[in-house]
Length: 121
Image (cartoon, rainbow, N blue to C red; front, top):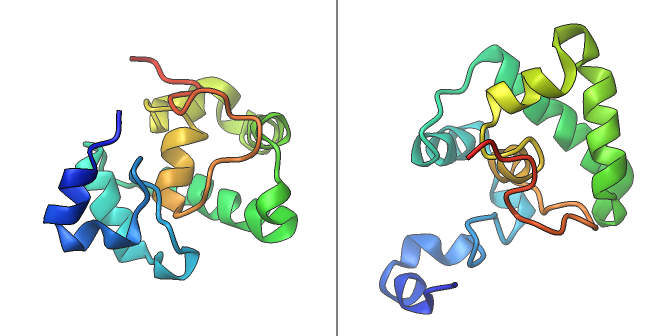
């Protein structure tokens, strides 16, 4: 459930939607990603950045029409040499789509039914 009061009381949240995703893509920066990761309890490594940059490139190519199934398959294929799905979930325990997109400053792909898609929690 969304708590609108926390957004009214905290003007720093104005750039985020009710679920913590950036509401305006140009506000993203590596610094923002580090802050979001810290809030998620993650320390970003080079492996995290590889996935984040891959997601951003995919979004740049596909735009807002990108689809969850296509993104998931592309991520698994791109990182197959690292361990595929297992590797992605190890990096992003909140799910490579949900948590990965959040840290990359991107909206979720179309067709993502559950915001915690892929979560191990």
